[in-house]
Image (cartoon, rainbow, N blue to C red; front, side):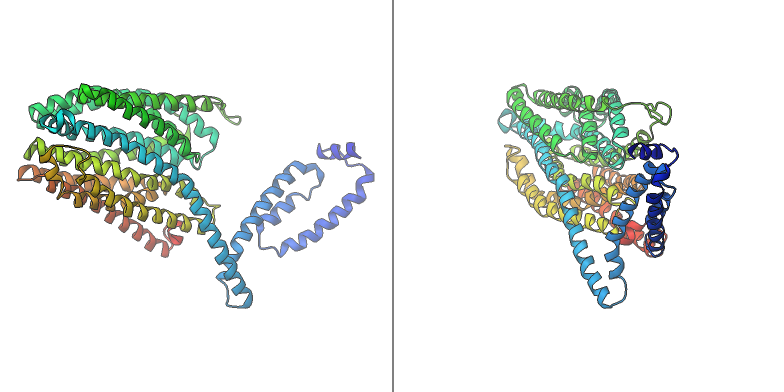
Length: 552
């Protein structure tokens, strides 16, 4: 009997003694067919009809049965929503209650998903700006808080935006990998990250040379002589960090896309401890010693990421069983990462150009004291705004999953609600912290710089508050694929801020007017993104936009 069944599964003839059993099976199939004609799930009926030829298609039937089970599960999830939209009968009331319970469960699951990604990112966001603040505080206390500290802070104000651009570019690579690999097969994403690690080293070296050239040109054109010399030496040492920074962010993007935000947090912890220890040891060498301390920690973190990522990626087969061997250029996911990462890099370049223009306007019309005060205000914003970026990255990672065709509509609604809640929490916590940090005197012991910072604390806090919601909306738009819109609007808004900086440089400007330009930049972005989402929701009501905006 076993042999006959095995021959049947291989496509052979069915023995005569099995005919009654097959006849009974056909009777059950006919009864099932009549029931499935009344079934509201077409996938279930199609799957059962695929089983009718008999045991010869047992393997195909098993797969069809699995698909039917998945279709029935989706139908059961959508049934409460359909009954809730029906008439107001007794069964409709029960459907409404069941739909409410299902919606509440989906909100809880969405909150757990967002928390699992965001909470470790908050820990990482606390560690990374801690190193930048430690570097600024070290520079602000050089020479006992006298002219040396003001000169060091002013030099940092001129070159820090360039390294912030490099950090943003590497962060954009991480975001592009995270949002692209979140919906991709693990084998393809592992292959892309292995190839991207090699490209990151070469690209980091190229970016380091570009940063050196741009820094030299800007310092020669607009910076005073003493500030330019100190900033040039700092740039020369700090540029060694850039290849390591790109390698670390490539690995982080792959880990975030796979839903692992704990491993990057642990690496950030080790790197932060090493950075602070190196800053304490190398502070006697002045500002170049601070740059060397940051480089040592970044190289160590990149080495850990390389060891963790490369063996896992290398264990995956490069070839495709159904096609030719895929290389670096022919991989579809790699093309998606390049396209999305290139647009994000353009966005970061526009942001950095806007902030750099404001910094040079303040340094040109003011003095080293004004430049040092602007450095502390800008550094406080950059560091505290790291606590708003976890919501941005969580949106880039979770929104593509919630926007899948097989996902229930309530998942997108719940995901957006959870992201908005975390954005509000970030705004309420980070804005007062930024204002308090500016006026605390921790970052400098220079009395003139501290006196300029007291009236600027409110503007820094307002900038952090607005950016909390701006980054959340940008993450949602990136997750939905509207990166091209972000690039266009960012270019226009950065151009407006650069025009404002030019006016500021030609007139009598200073620290407060420079910070007003930064707040204006954040406000323009927030209003533009809110108008974009409102416009798409109006289009959704007309049936010309995606289903996402109809349920958002």
